[in-house]
Structure formats: structure tokens, C-alpha cells
Image (cartoon, rainbow, N blue to C red):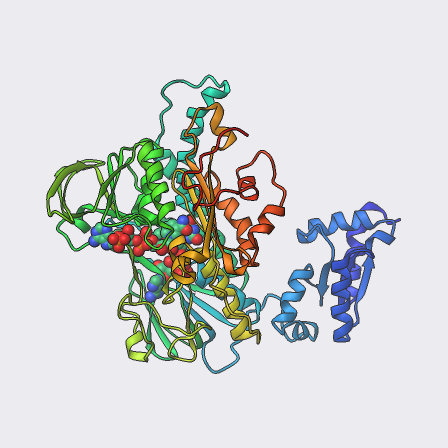
Length: 603
Ligand code: FAD
Ligand code: NDP
């Protein structure tokens, strides 16, 4: 056995005396993998099997202090710490391992461009898609730069690296949704014996502060992740000068010009304002609400899609009087029965819907935080006018593509004139072979974070690792985080009927009451689930829809079944987990044809 104080020396000697050292365990599959990589490359290495020597534990503890890595394998090459199996495989994939072993390159040395351009890849936009693509390309040994720049909102709001999802989208939205759910839980708690005071107040400023602190930590994490992968990050607005050159301007108007062999456009979307008096002066959007420094007060959410309904939902849930101004229908593109159930529940909770109406003018009638605004609107059918006072008007009437002013027209990258999004083929290649687009900016595809992330990763692998796999944009699950969440995957009932014909579609459905709603006497039969099935394909389930608590969690799981082509009989043969809401889908036996009003009672 080695004396305690000698453990460090022993480890040091192993690292010094051997060009490649693997601190390993004889039974560990990851260690086996690493050793076989070195064997395949014909590299001499020394493996110290810590489970076979008496001082193995002491050495492992010392390695933790030395490297921060507790696990094996723990690899050193030419006296430089490499890391574990993942890091080694990453270096191998990037074609850098041999160079490091031969001493031609340090493990942390940035990649050199493979051509005469400054970079192998320049990504414009550091959001979900851009960050994913750039990190993957860098792990594959490419020299990569990312440009990300946020143009402040009319109110002056701006944010850090990470794009919409992290700063003004999914993340703050879900946290504020959670704040609203907790409000409901506090009300329910009384029925479960908690002595909760009648008035529990919510402090908007505290919520905003906590949410923004968390976002700040994510912004920092993204910067560190780029730095760790040797991706150059420029906080500057980039535009094309020629097909292989972009020019950028930072906050201080400092210009930078870089060239690259390939480009990915991932510039995303920004909220649209209506062209009516007072819209930009007094209105806000989802880009402002999550950092609004004062309580929004009585709020009008204009628009009837995801963003509007979700914002109205959480604002009402944390105590603000909220109304939704709907031009035509709720949640266009979604199953309309589900959309109306979503709206119906919100209405029942006290959120007002001003239907078939559009705003025509916003005026400020009193300064303040929040101010008092007079909103004039017009009913679409009758032209009748409506005037009402609100403290905040939040526009969620759609989002415009960020393709303006980035020089695409000069380099012959075609955009769809209807929506200004980049037109690409199924490999996300634009009309210029070396320029691709991913995420929200890509024409005809879904505007969702996981879609952008997935597309970014696969695109980088196709561009730089010879891989072939394309992003599968079919059967992407999604959830609207309204007070009762609505999750779905696959066809809406309308789309299914249009594709397969009404006679060929069978809908199995039921209302249900979550067990936890019963003791708190909440909303009997407010929740609902349905499966849309194709008769001619042995009742293959082509649409899954659920309205209820945690619908997102449920939908994620069932989406796998739908994607794999599950039939109604597969759902029936699956045994439920009791008592859950998800088990409802294993026992659906009522069809819409025979039972249009499927209410449930009891267990
Ligand atoms: P973005 O994340 O928008 O990133 C683009 C980045 O590029 C931005 O930082 C932008 O400032 C920057 N940029 C633009 N032009 C330039 C330029 N010329 N130079 C440099 N930088 C530039 N999706 C979900 O999956 N789940 C949800 O729950 C969800 N909730 C949402 C809630 C809200 C309120 C909103 C608005 C969206 C939500 N989304 C949700 C959608 C999701 O946020 C987007 O689909 C996702 O962020 C798209 O990623 P992206 O990379 O395409 O673009
Ligand atoms: P959408 O484009 O989906 O919806 C716009 C809404 O505004 C529609 O209801 C539309 O009505 C209405 N509208 C348009 N113009 C006007 C006008 N002038 N006056 C009044 N109403 C108007 O936009 P969103 O911003 O809600 O969502 C954008 C995308 O972001 C979504 O498609 C989604 O992919 C993503 N997202 C995802 C979320 C999630 O996963 N939970 C949450 C939020 C967003 P009409 O139907 O009459 O055209």
C-alpha cells in the first residue's frame, strides 16, 4: 500500500511516465470502450485498474481533487487531462485525437478552419437552433462563430444569449404558469387540511426577480458552454455582404467582418404589433411581460393563439383581471373541439373573452406603473365599437421573421414573400448550397424549441460528419400551457377527417376528473381526452389530445406510441397506472359517434 501522502506522487508519476494513461476499472464498460479506441488506433497506453489494486480508492479520491472527475475512465494524454469516455469520443469524432496523441495539438486548442475562410461555420442567431448547431459543429472539430444580437423592444427591453425560449419564451412562461398553478394549489390546500389564510397575496416584482435571476444564470451557462467548446461568440447584429462574408455591428457600432465556408441562419421571430394608433407607444408583447418591473394590472391579451392564451392564463392565475380579444377562433390550426374546451375552462375561471373583435386604437389616459389605457376595438361582424380601460395591453397577434436587413436578397437566398421565412429543401438547405436555415425562421415548419434544437444538431452532423439523418417534422408533440394544459400529437380531428374522410375516422373520448380535484371540489369533468383513429388501418391512432393537469408530461410519453404507429388495441392492452390521469387512455371505450357527451363518474 502507498502511504497517503504518496498517492499524489504516484498519480503524478503515472501521468509523467506514460504518454497515455487511463485510470480505469476492469469491469467498467466505458473503460473497455476507451481502451478499445486506443487499441484500434494502435496507441500504446497504460491502464491502471483501480479495482484491482489496494490503493485504488485513494487514487480515485486524489483524481477527484486533481481533475474534478470522480468517475472512471479518467484519461491523460501527454500529461494533459482529457476527461472521461465522452470527451475522448468527442475528440475522436472531431478527428483531433490522433493530433493530440502525436503532440500536434493541445486538447483545448481551438480548431483551425479547414479552408481559407475565417471559419468553417458561421451561425447567425444564438437561440435554441443556433446554439445547438454551433456546439455540435464545434464538437466535430469545426471552427465556429455565433452572432447573436437582440434589438430592444419599443419599451427598451433586451436580454442575453439564448434566444426566445430562454429569455422571453418557454422558460419564463412555464415558470409563470407554475406561479399560477401554485395559486390554485394554495386554494385547494384548505380542503386538504392546510390552515391557509383567506387572503394570500402574490408579489409580481418578486416573481419577476426570481425568474430573471434564473434566466441570468442560463445566459451565463450558454456563454460558458460556447467558450468551453471554443465557439467564438459575438454579441452583434450580423448581415451578409456576399455569399461567404458577414459584417456585424455591435452595441457600440463597432464593425467586424468574417468569412466562412458555410452558414446557418437561425434568427427566429419577433412579436408583431398591429398597425393602429398607440400600439407601439402603449402596448407591450411577450418580449416585455416576463421582465415587466411593475405589476401589469388589468390586462388585455390581443390574439387567440398559444402566446395570448398562455399569458392571459398565468396573469389571471397570479391575480390580475385578464381578458382575451379574439379576432376569429381560438388556437387556429389546433383541434377546434380541444381549443374550445381550453377557452371554456379559462372563461369558467374568470378570464373574459371578447370575441370576434379587433383593437383599433390605444390611448393613454393616465400615467403610472401601470398606466391606464383606453382601448377602442371593433366587432368584426357588426363593426360596432367597444371601449374599455385596461392597465396593460399585450399583443400576441403573431410573430415576424427576422430576415429583414440581413442581406439575403443580395445573395440570392429566397424567402417566402407571404411570411418572410427562409425557403429550404428537406435538408434545410436554402437556395444557396452553403447556406442553411433552422428553427422558427425555416419556412413551413413548426415553431418549437425542441424542433430547432434537434434540427440544429442533425444539420451540423450532416454538414460536418457525413451523417444522413434528416429531422423528422412529423408527429411532433406540443403543449399549450393554459390553466388546464392542452397536449397533443398528430392529427387534429378536422385534419384527420380531411385526409381520411369522416366515415374512416373513429374518435374515442371521455371527460375525466383528476382524483386530486375531488377533495378540493374542483371542476367536475373539466378534463378531457381523445384518440383519433383510422378505421381502415386497424384503428391506428393518428391523433392524441388531452386537456388536464400535466398534459405536457402525459403527451410526451404517449407521443412515442403515436410516432411508432400504435393502434387503439395497443392502448387497450396497456395496463394503466392507478390512480393517474394517463390511465384514462388505456380504458377509452366510448366513441363520439355513439356517445357525444362522455361524462365520467367515480373511480
Ligand atoms: P430564437 O430562439 O428566437 O433565436 C434567434 C436569435 O437570433 C435571437 O436571439 C435573435 O435576437 C437573434 N438574431 C436575430 N437576427 C439576428 C442577426 N441578424 N444577427 C444576430 N442575431 C440575430 N416553444 C416550445 O417548444 N415550448 C414552449 O413552451 C414555448 N413557449 C413559447 C412562449 C412564448 C411566449 C414564445 C414567444 C415562444 C414560445 N415557444 C415555445 C417557441 C420557441 O421559443 C421558439 O420556437 C424557439 O425559441 C425558436 O428557436 P430559434 O433558434 O429558431 O430562434
Ligand atoms: P400565431 O401566429 O400562432 O397566432 C396569432 C393570433 O393572433 C391568432 O389568434 C390570430 O387570429 C391573431 N391575430 C392576428 N392578427 C391579429 C390582429 N390584427 N388583431 C387581432 N388578432 C390578430 O402566433 P403566436 O404568437 O401565438 O405563436 C407563435 C408560435 O410560437 C406558435 O405557432 C408556436 O409554435 C410557438 N409557441 C409555442 C408555445 C408552446 O409550445 N407552448 C407557446 C407559445 C408560442 P386569427 O386566427 O384570426 O388569424
